[in-house]
Length: 173
Image (cartoon, rainbow, N blue to C red):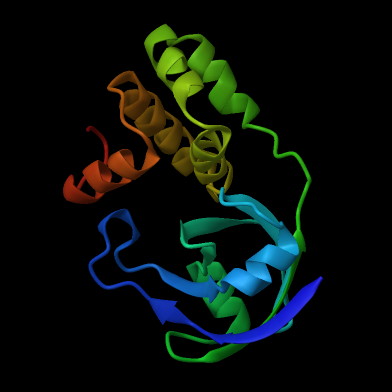
């Protein structure tokens, strides 16, 4: 397990990462986690006293990575942009299962399923995790419909999220 202290940062205008709060994982630290690796991978560990698991480190070039710190994490540590955070990380090799409900619905939509299968496993997980994190059955159903519609149109998760944000009712793309 590696341990370091860093500052919470926030992207300004950075394409699909606009507005993200994140921490940087310097080259030397990333190299201790997965030597020579330049692709996204998952970690587990702690942000201050908050346990985290299955969180992706995203490559930013030159061997440096970032880790998005979502609203749940920020609330859990009680910190925002500019705050110092103690980080302890190790590689998380646990295989993530895709949402059974999503897979069942995709089986009924060949065009969406075909496109879904072209996505890298990490991108498939974006859809799956988003659906499974829904707090109510109604929200889960709405998200499944949105995902199937987006996948049928050849939209990846980022494009779907932007389209839903632009469309106030969020029902159609």
